[in-house]
Image 1: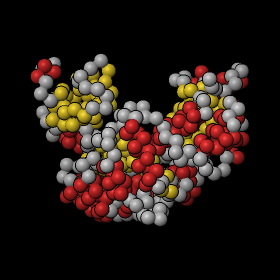
Image 2: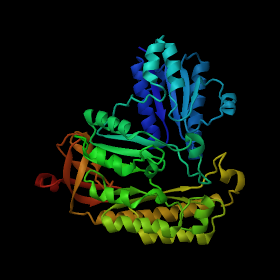
Image 3: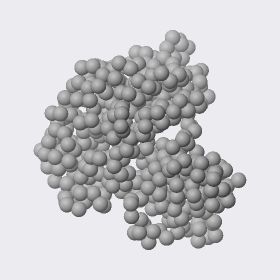
Image 4: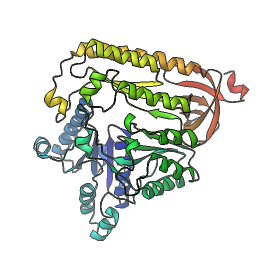
Length: 439
């Protein structure tokens, strides 16, 4: 039997793409293997958001090329955000790559794989189903799964390569999404995360104009699914209807991932984010007025072109005002092809970027630690995601990671009493279990 190995870099959307591709390869008679040196087909699913991710892909390609020069007969595939609409430069730099594929473009990979195994045109056509493997779903690897609902992005922030790699926004029909959720529920999934680069934009390009709330309502009727999450949010697309649906639908977790990127209006304008700090804070206030205990997570970029001390201080002030549950922070990295790389000088020294990173990381630690400490000796609901020899871990509805002793099975919802906290995770024991409580 032919074999394959997929190495995935980057975001949850890439993880979902890899699972879908794996399902397609398995339908063609391929079998997944853990190590790439044992695979007939090696796929690198790439990320271009940061230079570090691209460098890792380049390093792996160099290793595969060395193996090929030593006699390996592997097919090499590169897919994902590193692959743009034009591949001439990539083909010249890496002539040994057999297939280049943009995100969600599986046809070329599967055609190559089918040819290698003499799969008939009819079988391949049935799999591709008009393109994109519409009715082929990746098998879950645990009780949680990602479900893309809208691909691409129409925002074109100056620093971001994603729209140039993933294309314009294209929503999936609601019926297809709900079919996939039913499939996942039938294979043991208890929690699904609806994905989009700007997930609240879902449905604006469909004839009947469904929205994220429409999907929440449909998933509520699907047996087996206990929790629903969604990411990543965009402030201007987050309507009151969506916020109200999160508050009113019992399966939807009160967890919002809303990147602010900067606390300075002048920087947001240079980033072309399309909203002001006041508009962002109004959305946060709306969420907290409907769900006082909601978790709010954000992303921040420091050291963008021209960022002054005053603009960075405005970000610090915003973080201190809002007290986010989690702050994901990154230093600006120029991405070739973006507006910023062509028109804005990367003029903030790396030493300053690192200092600003450390400041934001310290704010995150203090904020997250304070929020987690409020849970000490309280009981939280946890979905068991892993359980090895009675030591389990999972997440609360608000996204905190919890480690605990349990006899529960993976996929169960259990009540855990929190006994220890850090800024990054909680520890505890099953509620009511006095034996574990004194360990």
